[in-house]
Length: 119
Image (cartoon, rainbow, N blue to C red; front, side, top):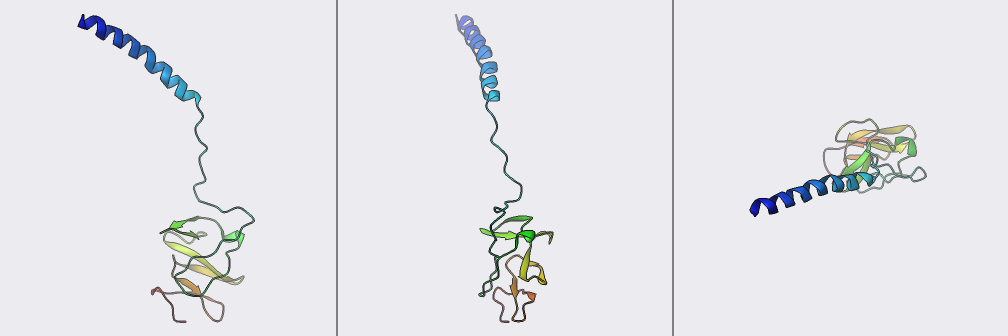
């Protein structure tokens, strides 16, 4: 009697498994998101810094290789790992460690090792 019940369950399982896989295969996969989070083309991005002074908005041409660092959105623009692009003026921009760049009084980019620059 046990073999009859087992054989019946085995037949039902063998008939059910391929049909459930076929139903799952018919459902489309969700679209994959972009590798680098990119803001919409008409939006300028606020730059992240630990400095107390605000930075100008990042122009669209520098908004690539973007990501999140400790909950803050930043863009690297070919600076490398653990670096962020800082934009002060059209002729003054450069790379510093994430959060450690700022614009000095003369409009140039400065990098600091401390969290709060005194310049």
